[in-house]
Length: 597
Figure (cartoon, one colour):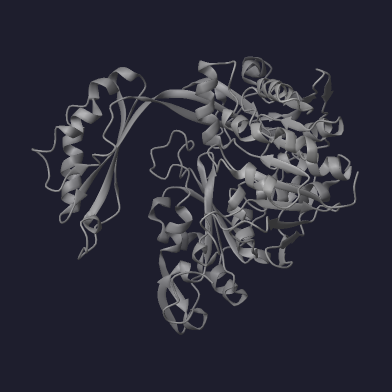
C-alpha cells in the first residue's frame, strides 16, 4: 500500500492503435503501471472468428510483437503491465509471454485472469432459468436467430488487484471492463477495501478517461485545429491518488495536449447517462468537476460511488450470414436521378436468398466545383444473405462492372482498389445480463495456483436520473444562424446498437443557451434519422454538457448494421455542422467562427 499517487500510463486504445505506443511510453516520463486496451465490441466480433478457426490462439498477437523488445526493461524498472490482449485465450497469451521471457533470460512473473469466457455455460444458464435478455430489445437469447460463437462476461478489477498483490509483473486479461485495467492497479497500489466506493468510482472514471489513449490528448477532438503537434498526439497518464481523485497528464516529450476540453470529450464518450455501471462500483458522474492543474494537467474530482448492480454484461456474438460491400462514384448534375437509376439496375433480378440490399449515397457534389472531385459523390453498395451461395450468384463486382456502358454518365470505381464479390462473414452482437454470482472470476498465477474473487456487495439498479426538457425554443433577440460547432464541441460513440453523443461548451456564458437549445425535439429536427428512434437526454451542468443516447441508431451493433458510419463515430461532427440560431454576443470574432474556442 502506498500513499503516493499511482501513475498509470496507457499504450493502446484498440486493436490497431499505434504500434510504437509502448516504445513511446517507456521512453517517456516514469510510470508505475502500463495498461493496454484492445477489445472494443467490434474488435471482439472479428477476434471471435479467428478464435473459432484456431482455438489455440484467440489472443492479440500484435501485443506480443509490441512487448517483446521491452521485457528486460520492464523487469529492470519494475513497471507492471496490465492488458486485455488475452482476448478469448488469456492463458495462452500468458504462457507465450513466459516462454519469451525465459528465452530472453528475463525474470518476469505473468498471471492471467480467468472466468469471462462463458460460451460453454450458456445452455446451462438457460436451463437454470437465466433468459439472457438483450439489453436493447428485452428478448431472450433463445429467440435470437443466430448460433453463439462467443460469449464473454465483463469482469471487474479485483482479479487484477489480486494478481498484482501476489507478485505478478504482467497481468493478462480477457473481457474485463475497459476501466478495470486502471481500477485493479489503483486498488492494489493503495490497498483499498472492496467497499471503498468513492475511491473505486474515481479510479473507474480515471480508467474511462485514459482507456482510449490519445482520445484524451487531442485525438478525435473537435477542437483539433488548436491542439499543438497533432501529427503524433501522445498517450495519457492518470495519477490516481489514495482518495480516488486523479490528475490526467501526458508524457512531456509527446505531442497533443491535455485540457479540460480534451478530458471532457473522453468523459462523455460511450456512456449511458450520469450513472456509470461497473462490476466493482456504480459511478455517479453528476458532480464530476474538471480543473486545470498546470500545463497539460487536468484534475478530475467529484465522482462518487455506490455498490454495483448484481448483474454484469455478457457480450454474445453469433454469425448471421455474409456480406459484400463495394463503393462506386457518381459525378456532376442530376445526382438523385443517377443514384435512382443505379439502384434500379443493381436491384434487378436479385437472386433468391438475398436478405438486404442497401445503397447509400455519400456526400453531395458542390454547386460550382473547382475540381472533378468536388463534383463527385460516393455510392456504397452493401448486400447481405444468410448463406454464401446467393451472394456468389449475385456477383457484386460483375454486376457493378457491367453497368459502365448501359447506365449513367460519370460513373466509375476506384481502379486502384478494385471491386470484390467475395462474401465476408457477418457477425451480430447480443448484449445480455447475467448475475455476477454465476460468473467465475479468478486470478491464475504463474505457479498455476488461483485466487478466487468473490461477488461484491451489490444493490438493485436504479434508473438513470431524469432531467426536465427545456420548455421551448429560447427567445433570442439578436441572433445569427451558424453551425452549432462554432460554440460547441461534441464526441460520439457506440454501445451495442445505441449511439451516444455529448455536446458541451467551453464558455460558461453559453451553457444556458446550449441547455435551452438542445432539447430532444430540437435534436430530432436537426437529425431526421432519429424520427422513429427513442432518444434519451441528460444534462451535466458541471461540465456544461448535454448528453443524448440514440437508441437503435446502430441497429443491433457495429459489427452487423448497414450504416457506413458503423459505430457512430461521426455523429457528433455531423451535429456540429448543423446551423442553429446563436446569440451574437456569444459568437467569436468574424473570421474565427469555424470551431469552438
